[in-house]
Image (cartoon, rainbow, N blue to C red):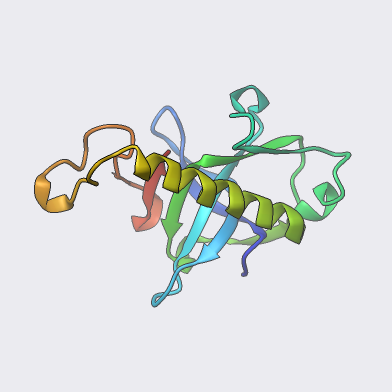
Length: 146
């Protein structure tokens, strides 16, 4: 599996259940071969305009993606997962979309980091408060909601 692939993996749902869902591989992480992925949803009404990326049947890469319905690539639903939790690729997105997703994510992070005078450290005991709360994910992954 490689960056830009659409994969199936167990993802936590809003009700706490775990379902096999599609996700996009954004990056392979250094050292251990884990993957940074973002979830894919058919709930188009949840789009964060200018951040999430809708993919529809009229898009050049929709058929190649392996997705069966118009969907939303959710950059606010991130995880770092071990390769063992990915069941396999069902398709891929075009390189231009992959680059756009990475640019949106990288542009978002510095803006929010600059708003804070000092980032909390784990030793400060501040993790678990606020919007960037790590939570145990499926198969040992860490889920972050931006």
